[in-house]
Image 1: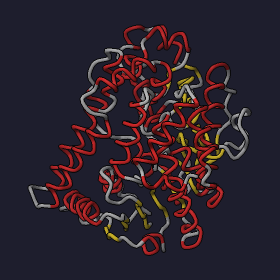
Image 2: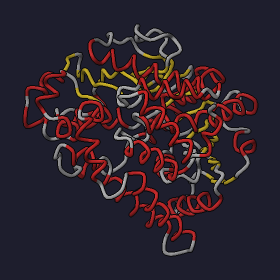
Image 3: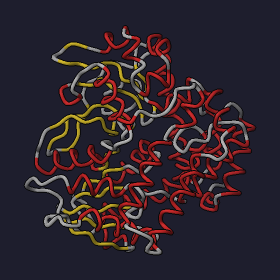
Image 4: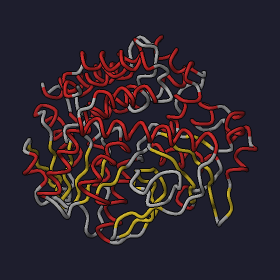
Length: 446
């Protein structure tokens, strides 16, 4: 199989390649094309992958290109991990929001809206090129905001664009281990939107084990989400939320922690990655060792502001090793290419799974995957505040997608103003002014 990675100079690409190196089964990926517009980053990551592959005679061949047409032609699968605007754009997303006293995280709230507005025009162009040059390819989208971008690409690619995220995978694994259950033997009832979902059940041999977890104070405090949300709140909800719901449930605390931080998460990553890419490009030391050191530092500090907001402590060492989206991507590719039936939590078109949303709305739910692609499994309805949040945020996503397609500033303002984490039309207008002044790619909104 031939795999193309868009955003091939991205920092997390070696995780995907590591999963490919570990796969020695028949029908594996044998060729990887890295595409990026930044040649320096592209060549640095190619060096990291060469270090990873050293001494492995069956390592997938790697080629690099800045030509999108060349990258797409002949691909069986296309993995999209593009960061439009780079980390400077993320810093602007976060800082403009913090200046207005609202959450600026890159996929949640105002920051996610700005990110979507500059990313969707690029990714819809990519979708058109895929439809033209590689109509039989499957697109696996990790480009954030993942659910929103997947939905924006689906009119051009239909069900051949599938969004993935590592958050539900990590959540399910941690909860299963807290229960003393092998994650591979559990069925997870998880439902929502990307970065806005709830784990409602963990089934082993047909019996839901989640109530047992909710009764066990020690077990609830043994994993990251339990410490982040607190045992009392999880019992009140009767579910375990995705970690990103911390911004909704503890808004004042997370905002205060973000404003008190010496620098934003985006600024930390920008500085760290600038150092990494510069040193490797200059030939300072082994490329893979430098990457792995930076990766570990990135994982240790992930979610630090949220943990600081509720005194949740440091990350557990078990969460510092990856096993997330790259494993989902590999399982997804093999299921489709070789009819290896499996169940994965994916971002796909709703198809009636959640009655409160229309058929084309992209949702994040368990899917059965085989040679025909993913099919969302039947799910119990969302109710109460969860249903309200999903409907409100989906409305925002739809406004962002339409604003990106039409260039409508009014729709962009409405998306900001009606998001649950932005509390004022006046603030929404000022935010968009600020984003447009900081991010030239948003000049198209009029």
